[in-house]
Amino acid sequence: MQLDVDRSDLHHVRAVTRPSAPLLPGQARLKVDAFGMSANNITYAVYGDLMRYWDCFPGVEEDGVSWGRVPVWGFGEVVESATPGVTEGTRVYGYFPLADELVVTPGRIDDQGFSDIEPHREAIPSVYARYAVTTADHVYSPEREDQHMLLWPLFVTSFVVDDFLGDHDLYGARTAVVSSASSKTAIGAAFLLADRAGVDVVGLTSAGNVEFVRSLGCYPTVLTYDAVTDLIDTPTVYVDVAGRKDVTHAVHTHLGNGLRYSMVVGDTHWDNGASGEGGLPGPSPEFLFAPVQIAKRRSDWGREGFEEAVAAAWGRFVPWTDGWLTIRHAAGPEAVEAVYRDVLDGRVDPAVGDICTLAGS
Image 1 (tube, helix red, strand yellow):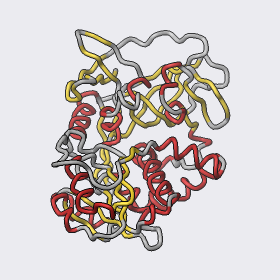
Image 2 (cartoon, rainbow, N blue to C red; image 1 turned 90 degrees about the vertical axis):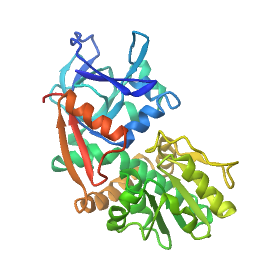
Image 3 (spheres, rainbow, N blue to C red; image 1 turned 135 degrees about the vertical axis):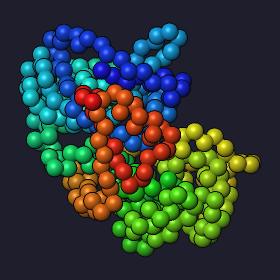
């Protein structure tokens, strides 16, 4: 069972059941147990062509429609293996399509996991092709699987946002303005930025989410999107998680040369096309491609050093989320499609996290 999405119309979804093909030598079959669904997955779809996310799990062309398979992060189990060194019953965490199984060609096998070395997986950085064995994963905790699926890939991005800005001393600024402040990626970034001495974190959000964002405690200042002109004119960096061009225009226009850096992280308001009047004052927005900063830090600190730094931050963050995050579960194609549509259209309570499985109903 899999859910396909029309690459030209993300609201056009179909459920498809295909027979499992026999494995070829060197392949393994992973049963997809469960995965998280959030605005992060919509970002993968929106930027699917630009960033080649669609290439990870190639879809098909049928009836004039180019069907894509939206990537998700979750847990799976090796249920069949024709690859020496990949043992049936091994539980792994990694990048999956919206499906109940995935056939991979394992390579670069070691005690910590393996990579899918299919040629189409080479389109984007190797982190998206790696499957970590849970027994060797230093951040894995069985009782935290739901949070791991939902928050870990987002938190790695949050960590990179904070680390990239810190690596550049916030470009001389001491105020960080974060849009889509109620989103989980933004919350993680704000949590870490607020821990930096002398940094004031401002959250931009919709009117309906103001109280929730304030309640988190990691945003000393919270403003609605229509109150951008209330931002204090001080050296500032802008972390754009919302992807709202009108808000970006308002921030740039209001702060002008006081805006030292403008970072594009996501597109939670992916369908907002308004850009405002005229050009964009201040620095040109730059897209943060997390794997580039990760590669830099692995070079700076070594692989183990990078993983230890992220794990330490994760260890502080996850217990804190217990105070505000509620997990809900969806099983079966109809329920999962409903969650997908809610996330796509921004109908999800920011205090809720969705864990999905296509196996069952």
